[in-house]
Image (cartoon, rainbow over all chains, first blue to last red; front, side, top):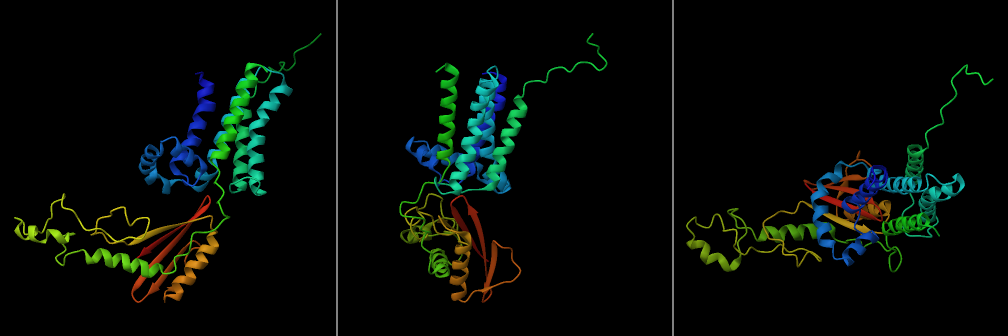
Length: 151
Length: 173
């Protein structure tokens, strides 16, 4: 696995998943899937181990950071995948993740999908998108030296 | 469709699955809060009494009724029951009634989860229920922490809104 992929995609993805699985309410749908997969017992043990940390974690970390981490991961993945593609085509793919995340959040506001709308999630997604694009921005072309003559 | 497009589409599909998976499932019959316990303080007293009733007066720990004779012959006079001795069980409401919590501990806090509930509604319901049972609210508490007092007792209620539920922690002091 390449270093950019592990740093910008796998690590934030894993961190977001860890926050959800270890500290968030087990009323979430993903816990049902985990039960169905027969991993409920193992996860319960991990949650019990992590439980003492929970009171130390701030609300924004528990409730908004995971979404931001995932948006960062998916945007970074697209940036890395489409970095040598034409700007227009790359932009479509790169924008897809943030658009989906923000659209999902707005759909929660309109009660079209289950979940709780939180403006902090929108902020988190926006920051993550900006950070990812900044991290993968192509290096600026070298500027011509001052006073250089073109004659 | 080239390989990159397929991989990207798969990544987006995975992302959508994560968004769905971390959503709260819809309640099957609308957002009905869990039933309000109508006799919370009575329940606490009942639980505490049940535990206390199992304790011997010398404070030597829980004693199962069937073991009374064996304890009388024990070399230590029964003051320190063996760990393997079958202990009495604490009487708890469902779904804890069949867990098998051993008697001997004193319950000083309980935690109730109200799924799909609004924190303000829950707070109002608890305050109304407690004041109806003679508890008075102590002034000057924070929005989510309320202290009640009654005849030398204090009850601290902490409300924690989380995702799609409200957690009520009650400490009896």
